[in-house]
Length: 311
Image 1 (cartoon, rainbow, N blue to C red):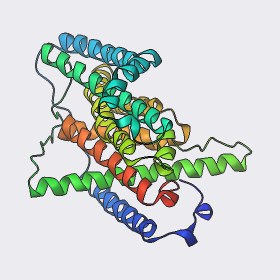
Image 2 (spheres, one colour; image 1 turned 180 degrees about the vertical axis):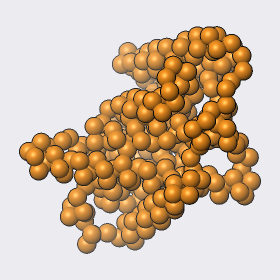
Image 3 (tube, rainbow, N blue to C red; image 1 turned 135 degrees about the vertical axis):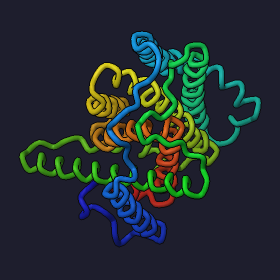
Image 4 (tube, rainbow, N blue to C red; image 1 turned 120 degrees about the horizontal axis):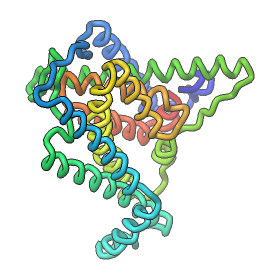
């Protein structure tokens, strides 16, 4: 979030003002939900049945497996291999004839990333079928609740999404204030926007290429990141340390993975809050909320890029 003086108020169109209005509404609704305590889980976790030592062993193995699989599938060599495997498929559907060489290159790059995300998630899910407890899916707070998507649950999901938006806005404001104070002290902190945000906001390529990126951001990323961080890393840490520390550390690890200092605090806050959501509502709700947040962000980056990249 940048200084308000840098926002191009005079150039905002209807989409820009719509973005400001909906953001403010989400902030107020999310803030009320936080105040009312309806969007958080109690600190008490129901003790799991079974052998604790076996559970800790399985979760340690699952955490190491996630790190290994993620590292291998997203390494430069494997991404290059996936790129070459996917290329004939694109040519078969004559996708290579739609647009420039750069557009084809980017589409293959996004497709390789999406395939890697789905492959990593698929491998982890297969391992979960073979080893019970490999991925922790069910809610286990003492006020746990599964969402069945009736009218009340859809309303609750909307409230959770508003809370997520509110927390992201508060964290972005805190970072902006910290950066401003640091600048007054002569320390200019990096304020670069995430690469994917810049790419979407300034997109001028074919829409079919952007659709591949959209699938990666709204399907692949939420699936593998939530399985890895809320389904594997967080339960493993929670077994080894107090819950509060496990939540904070998972959030920091999640934020650090995105590799952008300016976005570290907001993404870390979101990652920590999703741990609380997982305890109360389960892993599936975390995946859905993550996908909703990413889809919402992409929509506004396309519809109102000038203001969406600044707020």
